[in-house]
Image 1 (cartoon, helix red, strand yellow):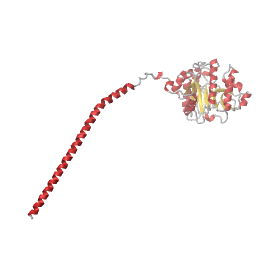
Image 2 (cartoon, rainbow, N blue to C red; image 1 turned 180 degrees about the horizontal axis):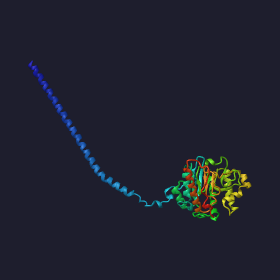
Image 3 (cartoon, one colour; image 1 turned 30 degrees about the vertical axis):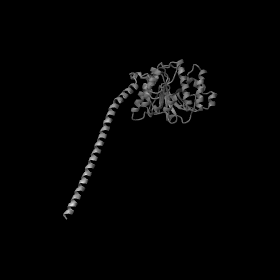
Image 4 (cartoon, rainbow, N blue to C red; image 1 turned 60 degrees about the vertical axis):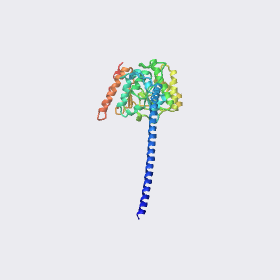
Length: 370
């Protein structure tokens, strides 16, 4: 029994010794492997550091080199706001583009013309815009107003106050100063207007033309006739909207774009050559009964001064009036004085709680003076 146990013990001891050597051998091999991996890792890390340090100056150099090549542009000159003209701050739009921007859904625009004298601060253009602001239902119409400026100063002032301004070239004549009624420059200005409106019709736009000395107190669109290619205000209205013998006034017209209206406006403009000393309104009175106008077939209507009044014949009812025109009045100062009174009368009317039964205007006052 003892020998077998001795033998077994010896065998067991050898076996343990063998396992121990094997384990020690594996440990040594594992330790060497770890050491090798650590050495490789440290070597790679050192290599990366060396490469990074070598690359970093090159990166700085490249950036510096790039900054020299792509150096920033020199600063723009320091301009005051007053020195920056509208032409430099806004892209110049064509007349057609301005009409497109301003037109209603049915391609209707409101057009007025302006020169420097009427565009000065506290002059007629300021009153014109103010009337839209305080009128009934007129504020939203301002986006449809196109102001055709006859000189650069008028265009500059218009651009400060309004969106749709267009400078029309008038190299032949200087239209910037006040043009006295029926003088040669006044006639040229009126015929330039007819030429311009012909172009508007040819581009397919309907228009309301309004002089800038007309105060817009109510939205006039509901008072336009549903039929009629050409509709015009009157100095004196005699009761019949179809009667071409009404004393017409070209300061407020509504015209639909079609072949008849285009043909008529071309004929009207051409007729200035037959009457070189007359303005557009007087020439209209000469041609309106001509056979050629009947052949064109244009349908004409004339507005009642109850709705479209003026100093020649003031509206009889402030509860209905849409526009008031400083017609039958010569001189900028007189127009300014009396149109300010119109707006004063209108503000007083708006402050009342009940409709006015009897209309009494403060105008004309200065415009009645010789």
